[in-house]
Length: 67
Picture 1 (cartoon, rainbow, N blue to C red):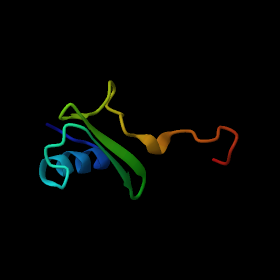
Picture 2: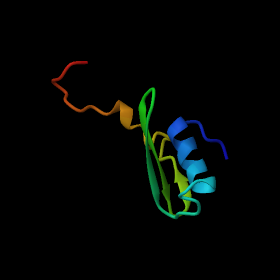
Picture 3: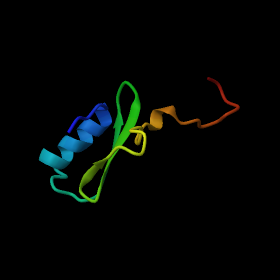
């Protein structure tokens, strides 16, 4: 398995070795140099259809707001 995103990597290892070890459902919110998240669904790391699941740092909050 190849994991290419920091938040998904953290989620994967939290599920493999951390306090959420073996959980079948898990969501991790990572706030660092950016904002990202990762999810375990049915015991598997979820990447989404195009591999961009969890990329919440790129969401528009206010389309009329400051850039």
